Length: 131
Image (cartoon, rainbow, N blue to C red; front, top):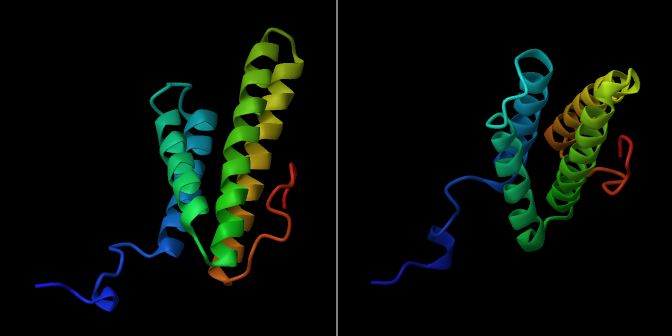
């Protein structure tokens, strides 16, 4: 017996997955800032970027596509800022880089959550700042 394509809906909607990626990023940012620098905490962000990479290539909805591209950029630019900030922690500058990373991450996460809730795309998903 074969099922029609209409009955084969995904178990989780793609907009819920995009919100989930933002939540994974938010958990990671807050955990790094307030708890510890345990490498297992970063696993949540890695799971988020894997979801974003997989869905960005297969998503046909332009709104969600912009969010997934924005999330991919958030991960990679954030990782760059974390590495640079960690290396510069031997100097005072590193603390400021890490503080900037935390605020930058929260702004991008909150902006993404608000715009996806309103059903709007990210205006500039490839931006290094706030899209």
